[in-house]
Image (cartoon, rainbow over all chains, first blue to last red; front, top):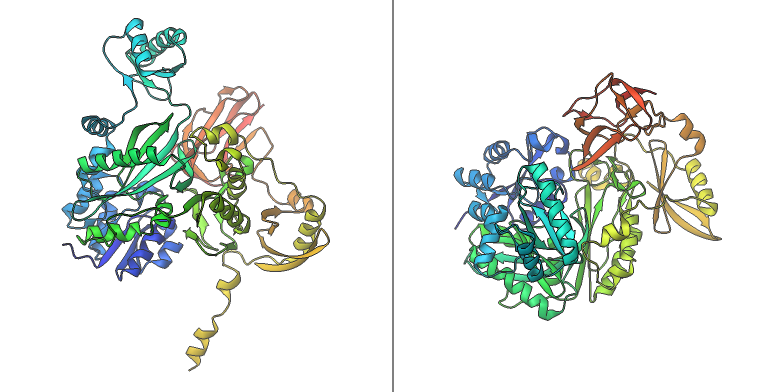
Amino acid sequence: MNKIQKIAIANRGEVAVRIIRACQELGLETVLLCSEADHTSMAARTADETFLIGGSPSSESYLNIENNIRGAIASGADAVHPGFGFLSENADFAKACENERLVFIGPSADSIRLFGDKISAKNLVEKIGGPLIPGYSGDDQSVEKITKEAERIGFPVIVKATAGGGGRGLKVARTSADLKNAVESAQREAGSAFGSSKIFLEKYLDSAKHIEVQIFGDASGKIHHLFERDCSVQRRHQKIIEEATSSLKRELSEKIVAAAVKIASAAKYRGAGTVEFLVQDNQFYFMEMNTRLQVEHPVTEMVMGVDLVKAQIMTAMGQALSWPDTMEPRGHAIECRLYAEDPFKGGIPSTGRLGFTHFPDGPFRRFDVGFEEGDEITAYYDPMIAKLIVWDETRIRAIQKMKRVLNDTIIFGVQTNIPLLKKIFSHPEFIDGSMTTQFFEKHFAKALDAQSLVNDDLKIAEELYRKVGEAKAGSSTGAASLPNPWFHSWEAN
Amino acid sequence: MGRYRVTHDGKEIEVVAQKLQGKLWFHLNGETFVYEPVSEKRQSKSSGTTNPELIEAPMPGKILRVEVKPGDTVKVGQVLIVMEAMKMEYSLAAAIDASIIEIGCKVGEQVKLGQMLVRLKG
C-alpha cells in the first residue's frame, strides 16, 4: 500500500481544478505545478499551494519532465496526477516518477509504452483476436493480388503509401474499376515522394461512429468496464460533444465493451483507460487505447454514479474501490466543450481576459470550469474554458436540457463556440443519433453567419452602451470586488 | 457587470451587460452580443487591418515558419507566414502581388496581437 498525503497536479485549467477538488474531498493536500502564465489562475487559487515549474510556453513547463519532477519533490508531494494531455501519456515521465519514489497516478510506464506505440498496440489486439481494421500489407504488390485482397476486404478501400504521411500517396477506391488507377497512382506518388512505391490497403470507413469504452483496472487487478461513450462529433479529430451511453443497439455495444475488457485484461491494465473503436455497418474496429483520464470522463460518471478521479487516487494508494460487482448505466449524459474561439470567423481562437461569466445551475447540470472572471485566456494553451455536462432520464431530454444551458450560459470578454454548439444540438442528424465522424465537416465546415443587431436589439445595444459604465481595467468586477461584510465584522470584533 | 431593464418586443426584460475596453457585451434572448458604436470603431485602433501592404498578427501566437525574405516578390495568395495559436496552425498569405520590404518576426517568436509581421509594397 502506498501512503499518499500530498498530490502534485501536473496540469492546468479545468482538469486541474477537477483533480484538486477530488483531493480536497478525500482530505489530501494539493500542490499545483504551474507555468508563469497560470500562477494566478483559478486552478492556482483552488490548490493549497502552487509551485512554479517554468515559463508560459508548455515546452518550458507542462511538457518538461525534469521541472515537473523537481517541483513535485521540492513541494513535498508523494504522488503526481498528470490529468490529460501534456505528460499524461508519457512513459518517460511515469518512469521518472517511479525512480524518484513519486506515485504516478495512472498505469505503469510499460502499459503507457505498449499502447503509445501503434504497432505494439495492434500486435496485442491481433494476438487476442481483437477487431482490427481489415487490410493488406503483403509484399506482392501486383495489381491482380491487390485487387483480390480489396475484394476480400470489401469496397471502399483506402490505398496508403507504407512510407507515407501527410496525406500523400493516399487514394480511395470505391470499385475494382477504380482500384487499378488508385494503386498505380499511389505507387507512382509514393515512389517519387518517399523513395519506396510500397503501398498497403485498409478498409475505408466513410461513415463510422467513434465509440469508446471506459475501462478501469482496480488495485486487485480486476478490470471493470463502465460502458461506452459516443464521441462522433469531432472537428479535425478533436472531440467537441460526447455522450454516455451510445445509441448503438445493446447487442452491438455489449460486444464492443467485451472486446475492450479483453484488450485491457491482456495488458494487465491498472487505473483509468479508454479503448477507442470505429463502428460502421454493425462492425467495430480497434483504433487505439488512451492510457489516462479522458476529457469526457464526466459523462460516464453521470450515468454510472462513480467518481473516476477518486477511483484513480484510491487505486494508486492500493485501496479497493467501493463499486458494486455489476453496474448499469442510468439515463443519458451529454458533455460539450466550451472553447474561447470565434464561431463567426471559422473558429479562430479568441484570447483575452474573461469578463462576467455565468453558468446556470440546476438539477443534473454540472459545470467543470477552469477559468473565472478576471482570468486570462492566453494563446499558449488549448482554448477550453469549461465543460458543460448535463444528465437526464432520456437522450432527448438531455439534449433539451443542454440547449437551455447553452442559452443561459454567459461568457463576456472572449468569443465562444456556444452559437455553434447550439446549432449542432438542433441538427436532425445529431438529434436522431445517427451522426458519424464526418458529421462536423459535412454540416459545419463553414463559419457561422455573423450576428446582426437590428431593430429592437440594436436600440437596446445603443441604450445600454450609454448606460453601462466601463469595468475597471485589470480587476475583476461584480460580486468578487464587493467588500465581504463578514470579513469586516470579524475584524471589527 | 450589471442587470438592466430594457424594452424588447413591447415587453420589459432584464439584460446582463458589461462594458470591457470600450465594447459592450450583453446577453439577450439566449444570445451574447458584442456592440461598439460605428463612431467609436473608427477611432479605435483596429488590429484586423485592411491595408494589403501590411500583414499583422491576427491573434497572439507563435511563428512556425517565415516563407519569404526582404526583396522577394510574391503573388496573391502566396503563404508568407505560418503561425500557431492554441495548438492550431494558421497561414497568412499575401492579398496582392507585391515585393517584400520588411519582416517583423522570426521563427519561434511569440508575437502579440496586431504586431507587424510583414511589410509589402504592391
